Picture 1 (tube, rainbow, N blue to C red):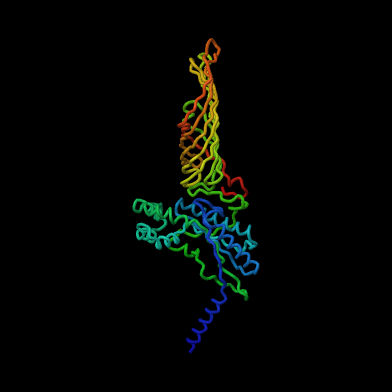
Picture 2: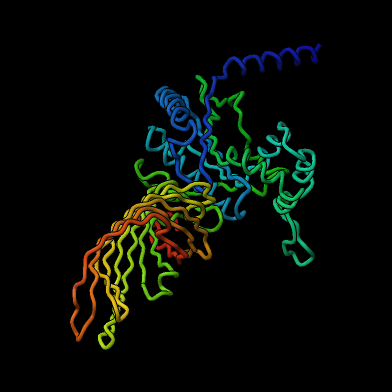
Length: 422
């Protein structure tokens, strides 16, 4: 009889709790590779955030929010320590976003930087039809994040084995189809107040808990303390953080074309990136050499602005671009027998590729083709004078630029803002 009474009591208790529970909403925010700030134009972030903020404001006005929990993740690509810092920065940026757009007290917001989302990756692999699925799951299940030798040195690890598996075919598949889904922050109202003041746990919220992430499939979950990752205004969002060691993006770069430097025509270029897709470049070259004794002149100056669109970028300043350029040139060329003095105008398209070689240095290769029109005067140097011969003009279509440039990325945008990451 006592057991029956106890079972009935427990059943009624569970029914009471389930009836007291309130439907709780959640939102998943997605990021571009290496970015920390919320980009409302990426995927459906704007729509989801708008819906979620309305729910949060309503719950706050009714004084029913007990706590907001932010779980932030990174994908496996990139170095592990920077992924941990990146997930921490993402959690802080979401916290700052909530504080700007709601009146929820800061004390109600809890941040959890979960690092690499191994648990979510395993779930996605198990539910997919990707190549070598069983072998990938075996690596995730059986290989620790780090494998150490007797001297406690890292000699192997889960990510390395995934990259080596089957020549990298499954890793490439995950990189293209799954990693973008792992670069996310999950914001969830986990605890609400009941009318009698007691806490209840929200049900049916699709989220991996911090305890779960601390289990078999992740390194460790780092609880983020007070920091100033994101004090930027809403207009200053979408500043990228490189996933492999660069914590912020350099917006400005100075360059010199080594090809032109080699032929004694020093060059200088300045490029500014508006975002991860668009940039503007301004280049100039000048060779102003002369030899009065032999009447030889090698004088040439060029100015060429260019607009570029970047694609297939692995991170800022690393990838392909196509561009459209124009330009003006002034020249005086004379070899001791005949001289040519005039001006030229050009316009065309370009293609190039840039890759980093150091923390602030890159190399860039490129080529430009287009149309050039020039009008010039021919002259003969005689007895210290220059005798005019005739005026001509020429049109030309073909290669106009050849580039192998050394790039110095020097302006770190986030350091210019208050609270920027160093």
